Structure formats: C-alpha cells, structure tokens
View (cartoon, rainbow, N blue to C red):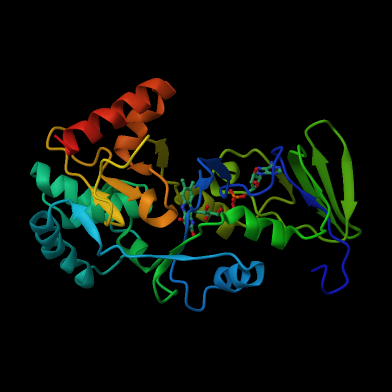
Length: 305
Ligand SMILES: Cc1cc2nc3c(=O)[nH]c(=O)nc-3n(C[C@H](O)[C@H](O)[C@H](O)COP(=O)(O)OP(=O)(O)OC[C@H]3O[C@@H](n4cnc5c(N)ncnc54)[C@H](O)[C@@H]3O)c2cc1C
C-alpha cells in the first residue's frame, strides 16, 4: 500500500512486531518461537522475500528421519483413505474415520500425522483440513539467518505503533475511527484488521456496524489449535547427527514429545527443537518452565536409553 502512495500506520498491540513469527537467538542460531519453516518454497512469496534479503535456506527433508513407528503410520493410512468417500468434509471430523478404541501405536500415528500438523485432535479437526496449505510445492525451508530478517525487510520504513491495543473499530460515511485501550481515537479512510481468530472469538474488538453474519458464523465455527515448541541447548550432540528429524513413540503417553528437529544439522549447533501439539500441548500448558524441561529431558533420556 505504501508502494501505491498511500499513507499507512500499523497498530500493533504487543511491544514487538511479528506476531506468531518471533525470533530469539540461542547459541548464535535463530530459535524461532513461532513459525520456523517456509512451507512449499516453490511459488511461495516468502521465498521471494528471503531471496531479496540474501538470507540462507536449509532444505528440510522429512524423509531423513529416525525413530517413530512406520507400521503404525501405515495402519493409520488405511483409515485415512476413507476420507475420499466423506460426503461433507467440512463438518465431518477425522475422528469419524478412526476406531473408537485405538491402540497406543495408532494414537501415536494420529498425533504424528494429524495433530503435529494442525495442533488439534481428530475430533476437533474437519476432514477438509487436509486441503489447507496444499498450494505450495517443493521442499520446506528452515531459515538459518532467522525469520526476523524477512520481517525487518517487509517492515521497511512503514510506521508501526507498538503497544497500541485496538478495542473498537467503527465505520461510517466519513471513514473509520479506531479506539485504543487507553481511550485514544485515531481516524483513517480505511482500516484492515488482521487480528487472529482467537482475538475475534473472544470479542476483544467491538466492530461498528457489527461484522456480517457470514463472518460471525465463521468466527463461531472455527477453532484454533495448540502447538508448543521447546528449544534446548546442549554441550555436545548425543543424538543422531545426520537426521533432520527425530520422532518418538512414547508407549506410556503416545504423542508426547513426538517430534524433534535436529538443530545440529540445520544450524551446526548442538540444539534440539521439541514439539508438543494438541492434547499433549494442553497437558503441558499449566506446567512451570522447569517442569516442561524436566518432561522433555525425561523423553530424551528414554529415547536414547
Ligand atoms: C508455534 C508456532 C509454529 C508455527 N510454525 C509455522 C511454520 O513453521 N511455518 C508457517 O508458515 N507458519 C507457522 N506458524 C503459523 C504462522 O506463524 C502464522 O500463520 C502467522 O504468523 C499468522 O500471521 P498473522 O499476521 O495472521 O497473525 P499473527 O502473527 O498472530 O499477528 C497478529 C498480530 O495482531 C496483534 N494483535 C492482536 N490483537 C490486537 C489488538 N486488539 N490490537 C492490536 N494488535 C493486536 C498481535 O499482537 C499480532 O502481532 C506457526 C505458528 C505457531 C504459533
């Protein structure tokens, strides 16, 4: 929009830009707290941005994986094949395709294939979720120089007001007024709101006039998943140095710490990135940082026993 000569101000509620992309540094490498990958890099506009910044890419190979349970995933595939026959994929949950009682191995496979991908359990996930994000082609990139480079590049010199929490957006014939939580009112010709679904569901922003019914119905119907990441730094590498990913089937709690990224391979440092998604992520949500690290270390010890 600034390229088109419009005057733009970005209002950001937090004290930093980036939202769910958020790069911290760990042992000199970019520890992404939010997005790590550019999925399907071919034709992905983020790849063009990456090239413009001169940033490096690491082509992540999901097939270069150790651990896991191939047989369980093959068994799951036989159930998922029935997705083709589902008449209403938007309202049919994945759980409708699965047996009511699942073996620990099958529960692991469900976590590995579905829950790690979407952050949601099969009863909360429509079969049509599979169509999400299928547009990109080619491998997924990790960014050894960090997502924050892309962010700085996109931000350019556009004015951003951080700590500006919007509570009301009102539109009339003269334009738009936006109210901040301190009571300040800003005026503009147009306003584009890009807040996440959770903010809309919680009704944190009052829209005047109210949003159209179709949008309200979509906000009501959509949910959001939970995906947790934990970066751990070690004195040296004790895991498989050559694998891109490490999977783990915990028979006592299938799905817990089921996926790890080998930071040594992608970034050359002895770091691991562990994931919990869906139910295991909710189980960890109420724990202290120490307890989460203890849980991850317990998993790593048992994986390498
Ligand atoms: C753990 C995790 C891992 C992920 N991994 C990947 C990945 O590898 N690859 C990938 O492509 N995607 C990934 N994603 C998804 C990706 O990060 C998001 O799709 C993307 O960041 C969404 O961008 P957005 O602008 O829509 O929302 P957000 O990034 O959430 O930005 C919304 C912004 O609105 C601000 N805001 C909210 N309410 C208000 C308010 N009232 N007033 C003012 N500002 C407000 C927020 O502070 C935030 O900055 C991941 C997400 C998470 C959480």
